[in-house]
Length: 165
Image (cartoon, rainbow, N blue to C red; front, side, top):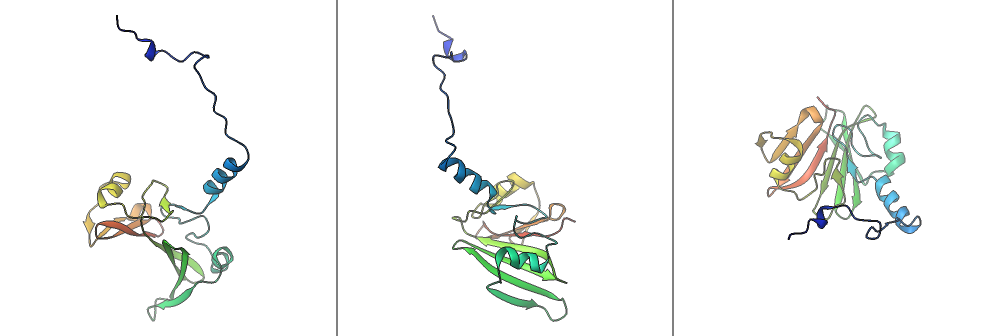
């Protein structure tokens, strides 16, 4: 006769308790969760976000590695930062406020969108997270969400954040 005991809940004799150590492990988990590795569509990062003032930006990240004016009449200034060895950040500033954010990374980058898109992912995986959109000029644009994905060799290379439209 076939036994169905494996379908029944475990008795207290078989159950194990798992406790999370409140010291080092907890600190590491909380530090990771509070980190600035999560990119939010239409908003940005925790330390760099759309609408933020130039003073707040430099207060969070310090002076940029490089500043560059974009076009003669646009008034846009690009601040460039190297976040870590795998990730670079460009912030578009106009009239003293963050207007757009571009994050470039490689597979080893810790940065990811809230929905789980990571650098190095192929186009079809981004579509699984964000929905079907036309793939043109190596880009997937989601204007209503405030995010654009740029690809190089069919792998996610740049994530651009802008106000939702």
